[in-house]
Amino acid sequence: MSNSMYLLQIFVILSIVCTVISQRYDVCEDSGLRYVYINEELEWAGLGWAWTSETLRRHNVTIEIVFATVKPSDPNNLGSIKILAFVPTLNDIDELRWNMAYEWIFPTQNPLPDVLDIIWNGDSICNSTGKLGKSCILQFSISRLVFIIYLAVRTPEKPYVVRVQAVYNDYTKERSFSAEIVESPETTTTPAPISLYVNDDDSETVGCGRVDTSNIYVPLVLEGQTIERGQWPWLVSVYSYSNLKLGFQCGATLISNKLVVTAAHCFFDVNNRQVNSEDVLIILGQYNLKRPKDERTKIVYPESVNIHPKYKKHNKIHSDIAVVVIPERVRFTTYIRPACLWKGPETKTSLVGKTGFIAGWGRDENGNFFTELPKQSEIPVVSDETCLRSNEAFVRITSEVTFCAGWRNGTEGPCNGDSGGPLVFEKDGRWTLRGVVSTSLLTDGSNTCNLNEYVVFTDVSQFTDWITSFDTDYSY
Image 1 (tube, rainbow, N blue to C red):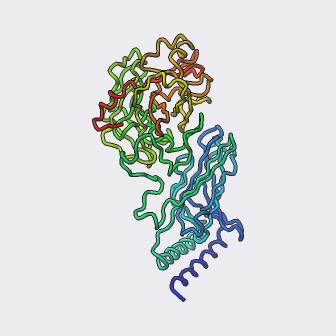
Image 2 (cartoon, rainbow, N blue to C red):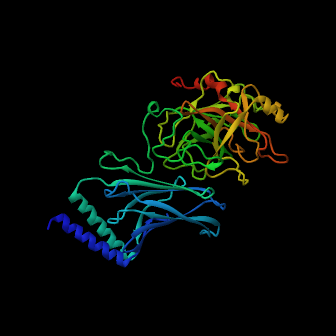
Image 3 (cartoon, helix red, strand yellow):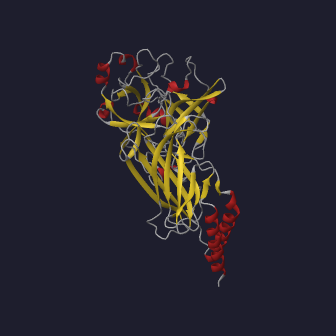
């Protein structure tokens, strides 16, 4: 008998012993995923749960598992994930939260897959390597070690890394599933960090206004819905310090590896005093406002914050635009990419009737001042005449360097917290920045936006020369 066959027999024996002793295997500590032995026919499957962080039921959810396994016998059968149910449950501190249950089926049973990452709505919830029940820790560890030795004797091949993802919209009842091999001995020589899927191409290769569709699966189409991470890689968050407290201020747009565009009013406090540039920081690639730092984000302290010279403190609408200069050129990834800057002779009137996309963490229809995850909407541009006729107050807050857009339906559009964020249009196959969220009329008796009125945007095309002057290497 060969050494490899002998080691394989030892592994199989230990695996059987382990299965009899323990029918449950916690995969990632505190992740909610467990390997569960079903029966002789189905063998092992993964059953998991994940808390939402909101009291309200989530409509659009995504669960993704990245795992290492031996070479799949059928590359077209990489397993599946199915979202089973949403259940309102009290969490550890007696708060009512929605709990999502899901099922993971995988074709390879010996050995069980090694889970590398579990990503729930864009956030990793896989903290560490899981453990078996106490009675089986030793047996499983030995069997895993024996199998690794067996693989080494049999072949020097590296493991295959597979990603499976399920997306479910509970409102429309639409489901989608995808699975792919993201790393294999045939295609990968130097393993990349699995949880990042970073594309280390330089800016010329990446180009502007393009989403890395090889690593994300949902296009820019959903109205008023939470977007997937990486779907708006140019969306930037702006923070500033006040009384030693760091707070989110505005959205912004990355337009190159050196420049970020946002609204000028984002850098003035409640007393209309300009914030010092050293008290400002921006976060590239941010997705969850409650988690400003993770392996996909990049926190940057600006080299300079440049307010347009025509912007006036007591007239916050005219030339409401600012450029933040990044100290070192940022390297683009799946989650950090620039939008294109609008170019061409098109006037504002050429936009009328066209729809663009906005996204941000601003106030939602449920009254939350900020949303945890960014949402997007598609809104139409209207003529200056239509905007001015809709409400005489627009005479005071519009100018030749602004335009109006929106549905005036009370629900869809940018609101408090979305200031500075992008309004992009698909132009020549690329997502291109044309508007910066500037201001809106207020709801009577409150300090919140009135989405029954149009929203005012700064027209970026009026400022392209000024914007690009901060980076002599910029080309578009």
